[in-house]
Length: 362
Image 1 (tube, rainbow, N blue to C red):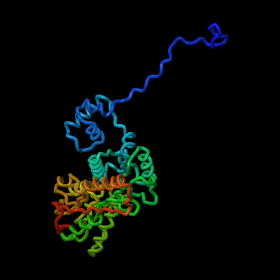
Image 2: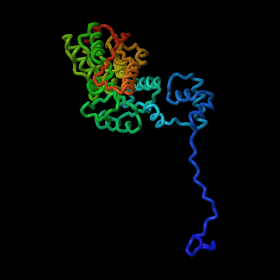
Image 3: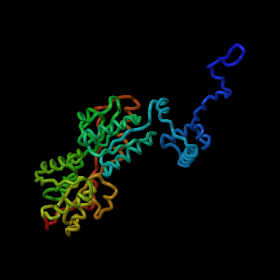
Image 4: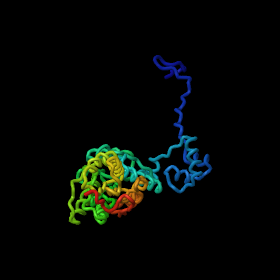
């Protein structure tokens, strides 16, 4: 404040001679157009590369990725969601990812999602409890996903599994039919085919190395094995349980090898069958001369065991593709498919591990 003669009034601050400089504008990061210019491609090509679409030539993709790295470009998922109404991300929950079946299904889901331009955010839960699965769902729903695929809920049920309202969901578990669309393998038909094959060879009965009690597929295979024996008028010996690992098949197989009534064994997966092979070999028994063995899954290893393993083949690639397609149908059409169930057939692949029973056993 100045006096009439221009001298500062008492108590007034003298005017500053330093000009006021506005704060600098935040520097914007590189844009999609910048990446396109550096890579010598269109912005649409950059968009396809950033979303993982499979329609870009490998050399072009490498050039675009190199340009992204050089410029420090990151796709703006929030902006993409506002523009297209989608985050182009699928949430995926699996349990015991180390198991071959789960890992191959996850791989198939990732491949199928990539073809549709979607990425996958994966959570591998420690236990199949409703609480753990529900907590995993909550974590994923906060990560901007368009929908959710649950590979297997195991002990969770439609009544106990907490899922966000209006979130598109697909489950690889037939118990959720009527609540969420489901895609699954025909466990019953596959197990029955394995047992009937062994009975047709002349075995009096078929022993079973089952999967863990908390696994829904393991339970379905046990029930189908038992029913097939009952329907054939054959005795059903008590099943022994493994944990899907080759080690558990070996440990249970050591006991079966000592039982001279055992001439045929149906294993709930191929890895336990591989463990059984070792136990039989160490006991001086030959497959299939002394004991016939059938597995389930038809993993790549099955064909290269000696002898090559007869097994029930699951089409994991088809499972993953259908899970993604069902989910994206709900995302894009905003429809509910709660009663939709796809049951994928299986094939019994007969190789050299099964033969008529030996007269020396039984």
